[in-house]
Every structure is written in structure tokens, then in C-alpha cells.
Length: 122
Image (cartoon, rainbow, N blue to C red; front, side, top):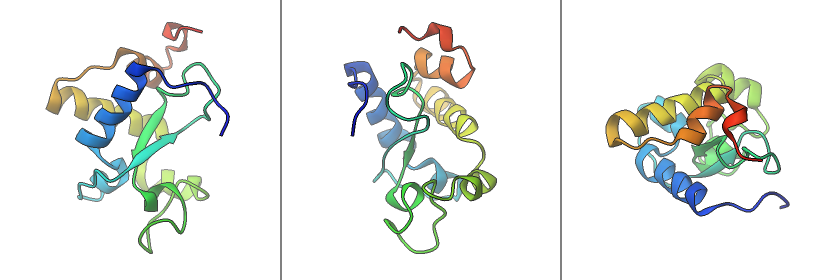
């Protein structure tokens, strides 16, 4: 899949999301599932692509990839967002969990979540 290469800091951020937050949809459903991958909300080619991400388990990421009955973001984005909230709101929630529970701050991801795109180096 084409896209921008992931930096060391971005890889660390992705690991923190999966390790400490786990699948954000499962978390909202009252479960902790750290067996997840990174969902790129707005593709992989934009300058902020690797900061605008969500940790999702297989079932919440791709239809048919996980347990039956999960609402996945692909291809059910509208249903997914109706159930769990917008993807930007979910990123904010992930960042709040990292900040509040684990004292981890990620300024560039926070900038994306707050529509401060100009803070992202092009």
C-alpha cells in the first residue's frame, strides 16, 4: 500500500495506542482488547496521516475479519460513527486516555485532533 513512511515517533505512538488504549470501539463497549491494528482515518499520504489514526481490532476495522456482529469502520463508516462517535472524537478520546491514565502526551496527534494542521511539518 502506498503512503508516507512511518517515523520512529509515529511507530511509538501507534504502539502506545495499541498497548495502553487497545481497540477504542471495544473500550467503549466495556472491553479491553489490545489485539489491534492501526486504522488510518484519512489515508496514508497526507502529512498528518500517521498521527490521525485509531487503534481498532480486526472486527471493528474490516467487515468479516473479526467476530460476527461487530460494526466495522470498513465498509460501515456511517454505522460505526453512529455507534461510537466520529473518528476525530475517537482520536480525542484515545489521547485523553493516554494523557490521563498513562501521562503520555502526543502533541502532534493532539494538533490533528484539534484541527491545528499547521503544526504538522510538511
